[in-house]
Image 1 (tube, rainbow, N blue to C red):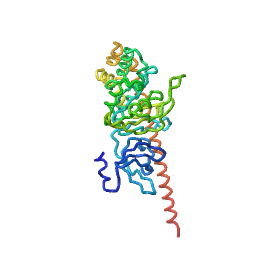
Image 2: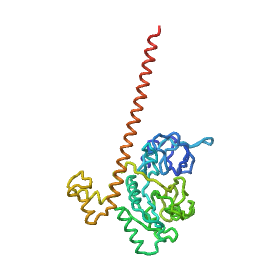
Image 3: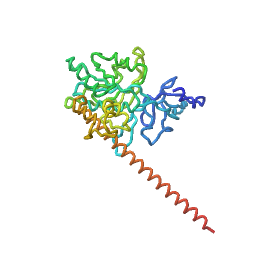
Image 4: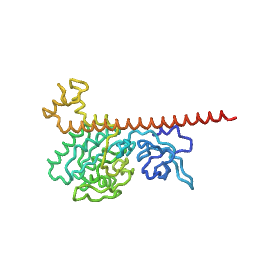
Length: 352
């Protein structure tokens, strides 16, 4: 961060970490204090470049009569992005400069392995290290059942640590705290996954509001409505936690590489296929299909892999089409402006 801020040093500006963003303003922590700052100077029409929690910012301190201002954003090391739920095929940044992405999955309901795979793909794409946290482990009384659920999650997230924890009993919390100590972690998951309870357990105090899940469907109510950067206790190694609202939808965004890492075993098998562009459908000598047939690769994994690749390809095509349409519209506007200026010039020249 110091190197990135160097060009701004000596200009009356200070580095700051954004801890909360709200309606054109943000709270940011400097070496001296937490300040309120105007984000208008860095406002952009690109949702992927919008200031967000976790960003490092260049701040112009405010006077007694005015707010501080965010004058620039420093380059992000990592950024957690998802596609927006709009027809414009845009990305949305949820958190920046994250070291670990904690994917909270509740054991109070049937384990949703497809959702584990989706979140893992997004986490790998962000540049952060994913970590699957199976919450509410105290509700699974049989140790053998808990071990099997953990193994299922591990198979759905190759190369990713899977931890079962219970905020109620404290089981697993020390291990989780040790893993994320000293860095920045973002807590992700659906409403009802126990994120707020887990956040409070890691923070050592009741910071986030907690509500019970609905008995009718086991889903939670949104208790976290903003993305807040919260300091973790120094006694557990320090660091910061970004808690996020429950995510109903987590569409992929430019996630081809992340999908590949989330399904690393399929990518490795694909290297052994007869054809380098094998689609793992009906081609001869397909190592992936052979693994499905002999039971070493679950068919569910292959179907999930195909689904996420199709989704990512479809979104990329829609995004390209939108960009082409916007570029075409800009060209039309510039052409119209050029004709207008030319006509005005000719009209001036004809005057006596």
